Image 1 (cartoon, rainbow, N blue to C red):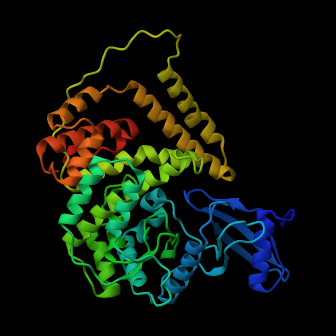
Image 2: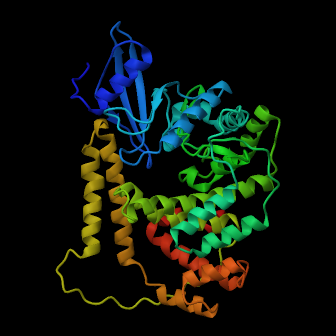
Image 3: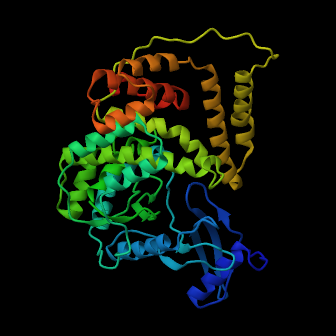
Length: 460
């Protein structure tokens, strides 16, 4: 049933744009914000025409006040070019720099049915059959994307992706030894560049819609650019996009399956070393982009618990980067924790309070939320995770003194100093002492932020 909207509301804005695009008067239901999308908002709405036709529509827009019209126009052009190349994408109904009620650059698209939640794609029994060939299907779809005609995509960014991500990192003004290690290794081992193609830039579970027949839609083209096509393949292999599962391609398949599908679409089969370089690049890229996203909150530009929480996940990518490069050092487990001082306060203690609140939210509040509270459930999970981090940090052994000793042994006063010396080459990332210091710092952060991310040594 249609709802009445006051002039200037989001629903009214969608109705007007959709009516103009379709050439017939439309009524719309109440827009529902979907989860995910740290940088763009996604809204679903049901629409009905005067002659009784029903239409499920998705609005994708920048947060009002933070719009980038050029990027949204580029995303619309990518959807058209990809569709022409046979890539399954949502039909583009309308786009614009703004509209009353929408109040930001936007895309209005057909809603495509399918599953996008990674854990469901990895585990649901009804998807067993498609999951068996999904890694190959993803390789095939990437091959189609990379064969799209780029003549109409001149507005897309093009250039050296390693230079670009290094510039983002430098702009953060936060030297990190693990990043400097990754940058030096990547520059020293770079493969020959392939001709520029349309690169999706964020092709992974969560940005594809899948049903029992296969891939139904490729979403979220905001990071699309022109560049080496193997970047997309390496990005799909990054450990962050396995969401805790073991198979190396999106937690659902093998690199061989991915390359089989890609070769079927393009006739090109990248080498293992080339794919490894781009997987390493993707890991470093996600490390830097995670910190960049967190800075939007930490720097005061956009208050968001989602963005803030990403800041505590940076150490996961630091660990993954050292892991993929085989540079995790031998860790000295010596502790320098001082005995806990007696508390002035009554019990429950602060760690006990955090655990009590977290457990109550997880075990009593969360189950009471219905499917109509999808956004609230998502935010609640973030809150529970942050409470867990706070509790682990309070209870963690203080390893700062031990890290200072390791740094002092290298002639460094701090991690910043170590990062700068790796950058200029006065210390080598292959040095055992450097590896130990970098690994000790990363593992100390990770053991608090997300100890479940640590791999069993037999799998590393």
